[in-house]
Amino acid sequence: MADLNEKKVNDELNEIVVDDGYLRIPVKNTYGEQIGVFCFNPTDIGILKRFEEVRNKFESVVEPLQETNINPDGTGTNTTDVQQIEEAEKRLYDLCDYLFGGEFSKAFFGKVNPFSPIDGKFYCENALNMVANFISKKFDTEVSKISTRVDKYTHGIRTGRHKDGTK
Image 1 (cartoon, rainbow, N blue to C red):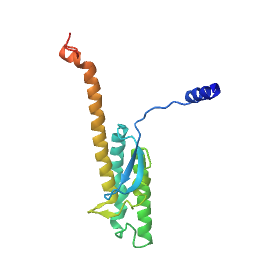
Image 2 (cartoon, rainbow, N blue to C red; image 1 turned 30 degrees about the vertical axis):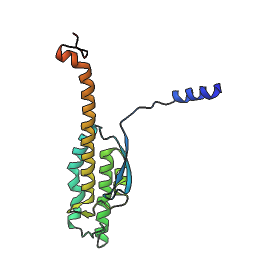
Image 3 (tube, one colour; image 1 turned 60 degrees about the vertical axis):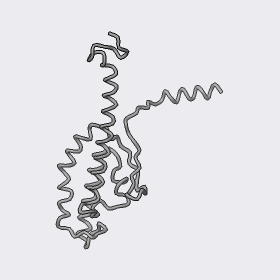
Image 4 (cartoon, one colour; image 1 turned 135 degrees about the horizontal axis):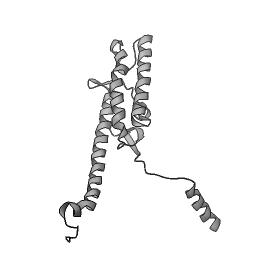
């Protein structure tokens, strides 16, 4: 029995486990059916810088599609169209995966082509907007938690009184 406990201690000393904020988020369609799973850190402030980079490159990703005939299912009508769509998909997948530091493309585009038209937009636009809203809400929640913790420790300094009402 002692050997088992020693192994457990030794195993624990061979790795460092840090909470890096990554979440495993199920991706569902409007019917509640899971279409993928997305793992990423929604409060990584590096996303802001990467988002700006991706936004600047997005037009170049979709620009070749302006001259392409796309069927309602997101496929092309001829060989050239198909090739342009596939190249645009690859560029989009790379950008999205870079942006979120995870397999965004697999989680969101595994069952639906990113260039499928939905309500006057590409599906990829809808997906990116939903993730942006999720990030915004998660970030607000985390900032609120930080603010509460900071308030706890600075209350006496700001008010001249300690939490228990004494100086």
